[in-house]
Image 1: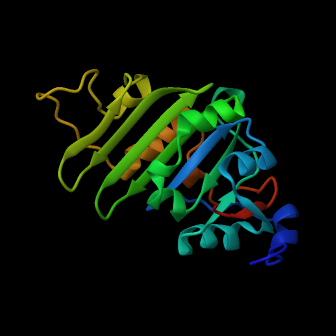
Image 2: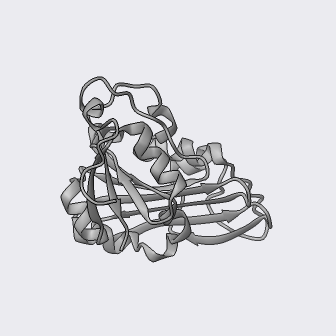
Length: 205
């Protein structure tokens, strides 16, 4: 898939609407992220621009392509660049959020949700420090990762302050979206809104 993806790319800059994503998917949110820097930090090969429809389809239907959004307005009056694709869902542990945050010198968040096995995961790092990491597998009812302390947004979705044998934890896909909305940008809420620009497609390492 060399060169620029021309399908809808012009419309992406003139009258295109955003297409939401999130269910059965994974994504990164990079505060004040810049496409070139994020691609370089992840070792991605730039494949050019794509319309939102074709780009999100690419993210869902391939395992070796990612798409990057333009910076989007979100929490704390910041702009957040989102990176999404099934490669992140399959290779979640291959992306070191703290290392990526250190390289980019900003806040980086990771979200994943896959309703088939009820796998729900999030991480948050600022300036190279991992502040929070959580993973829950609903199929077994097991919390498989818990690092750092939950914040108010996590308490609002029902997480306890401390993980212990008495904790009764149940997390859903909707909770992942609620947390993304509280921390940066809820990608499901993008659907149908005017696009600030096209997506950018990239090949994974």
